[in-house]
Structures are given as structure tokens and as C-alpha cells.
Image (cartoon, helix red, strand yellow):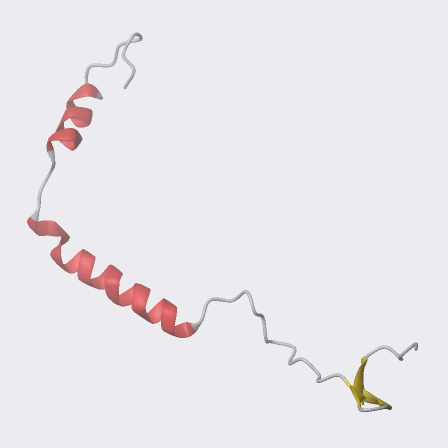
Length: 77
């Protein structure tokens, strides 16, 4: 049975009814990130930034800083 666009077929017992499909809100995007997730991410970033100055440089970071001052063609780094 062909239904007009925007209608979904609903079967109940032996009766077939044409029920209009629920309209979607124009700004409802199922692939958007919820606001709560952005809030949680912002809190984590703020905490990381607040405590990140206590650690200083790691050994690997110092190595790459020094290696950048002595560039050579054959090094992998």
C-alpha cells in the first residue's frame, strides 16, 4: 500500500490507518555533543591547566629541545 510522503503505516488488528509521522524539530541534530559533555570536558581542562605547572619538563622533552639545537641529516628524531 502506498502512503503519501510524511505518513507512516500503522497496523492494528485488521485495520490499516494512515498516521502522520512526527515532525522533527529543525535544530535537533542527533550527532551533536550534549551540553553536559562540554561542561565535563571544560572542568577537566581547567583542572589540568591549574595543576600542570607543578611538573616541569620530562626527560624526553629536554632531549628533544637539545636535539633541536644540533640538527643533523642522519638522525631519526
